[in-house]
Image (cartoon, rainbow over all chains, first blue to last red; front, top):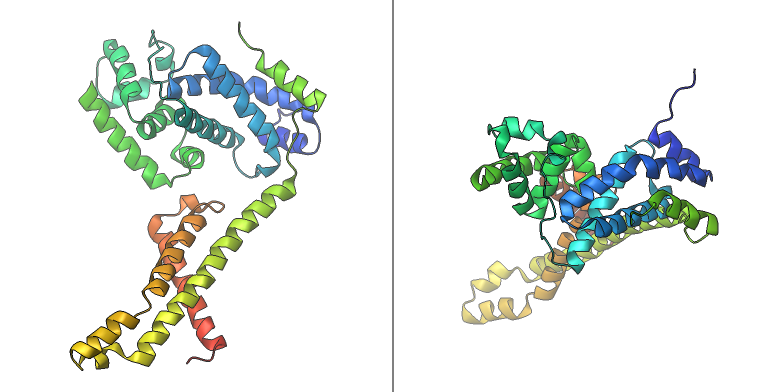
Length: 179
Length: 133
């Protein structure tokens, strides 16, 4: 029985010239990155698609710099993070496009528990997360909604793990005040 | 209309519009950062050596005891620019080192300790090389 290849193994083959396999990576990460970029930027679908396409373009161009001993998902999320920052440098948007909180909370139950609020207040949390400063919003989205570990968030945001904890703590306090 | 990102990316690769950057570019960039950080620390060490040399040669505390004239000599001759350049280069080098490899995982205190120890070691070497001891 053949073992399913890890992302890192696939990337290793892409680095050795098997470019077609990049399609597998795009397919796997497209929806994850669309969700993440949408939540971070609060932009309309077309804008989000453009950013995600740029993520994959940058990912392919820079694939030789990827260290296969590390997690590929953290590496590609790092590119998405950088492009979101670039996006905010060019534009000053933040007009909410999220109308329904259900999709966001498919993976955000942990936040509801930690904030000890009723499930009916989901939409309020959603609005509060949107109002957070970018550095807090990203760390909340990565930890509670993308379910990344402290170590992975550290690799994505390039901050040390204790800073991740500090940012999360402050973000939770801010959320409690906002709700 | 929804974009087919996967198809667009693969088409770009096939047409040769999207290419991987060669590995050496990244290696040069990473080594370049380390080189810049080390070079800046060497320059900082030279600047610090100049300040220490001034202090040793002028012995400002003895001049200070001479009253107004002595104080004026110290204030006018002190190598402010060297002092400022040394401090700026240590800070600049620390900022570069923080962005090298996995150093973002280290705390600010660890990075500063590393930079200061390296500066002290390089300064000592500069003193040894120039025979200032």
